View (cartoon, rainbow, N blue to C red):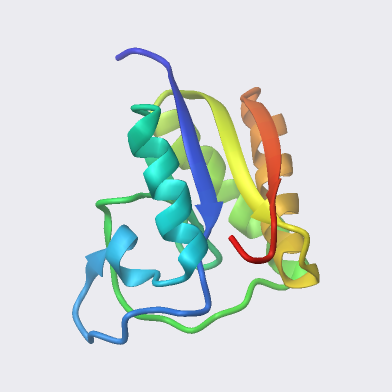
Length: 131
């Protein structure tokens, strides 16, 4: 399996409330998700979403509805889930699109920690709040 570069963003508080699992790209309805998905498509890169519950999920991975905001004391456990997915999918580089929001900080910390553990390159791109 070839090593790969992915682009990802944190999930969003805005979610489709459908009770059955939906592909992650449809579950999360925040405007930043659509923007990062478009960028991934334009650059022919795999698109992943960072969930505070499920870790790193591919855009087409089905996930059930949930409502959870990651806290700082959960960063280590989430980082361990992310490492598993990085290794499973043979990811060698992550381009993370984030926002400069206090509530997004634990997601960034989990990704920084996990990529360090897995020896994966990480670049962080801060989006404007209107993205």
